[in-house]
Length: 304
Image (cartoon, rainbow, N blue to C red; front, side, top):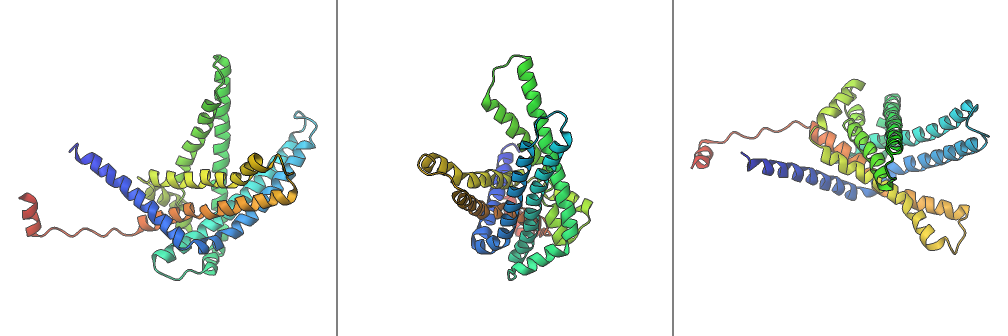
């Protein structure tokens, strides 16, 4: 019995890796289609987010002090949250369209961008509400991680512990990772909404059921999207700062060129997570084909 347990676990890991390979294959074979689907979200989200960040920064700079200026601080925070929510909302719509496309691919149907977008438009209000719910959970997660970091700083000061930047990063990223691991259990709620038109509570329940036992798959997709997207967006600016900054002045034109390069690199890898979530939902929802019962000869061979 003990010898069978490692084999079962290795088969489980192999199945997860095989699913990830299949997701990468789908993304590679239909790369141009998914780029066409995600680029509107990338561009609109980037513009709105950038404008909101600039506006909120200007509002913060206009505040003479912290005390007695709570309305101004809240207004700047609201503008920043609006930009973040708009960014999140556009990507949720792209996720919904990707789910429609993945189902067409697995069914062997012809891919059409307009058809995917029509389904998204038909569920606009429900998608908006679901995106708002997810965004609210992310805000709560961010506030929770802030409290954890604050508690760590208080304990370090209280007990006279030496400052450690590495330990601080572990606390921050560990809190975020735990929160994302919990939220990832409900990542399939959007495919459940657009593919089966389930009620809200059933979408979340369905996602929780289908993600059971697939944490390796979910973690790999989230790391690829969050870490990969961050590296892709930051790489052009990092290269500029380390190669050209000492010789060329960073103008607005160069800034936007670097921004577009980062957006293009990020857009090239972002669909993988959406494809993976949709693929897991569709394959896990498919009815399982029962294995045929062994005939008499097979039973006799197994015994001998």
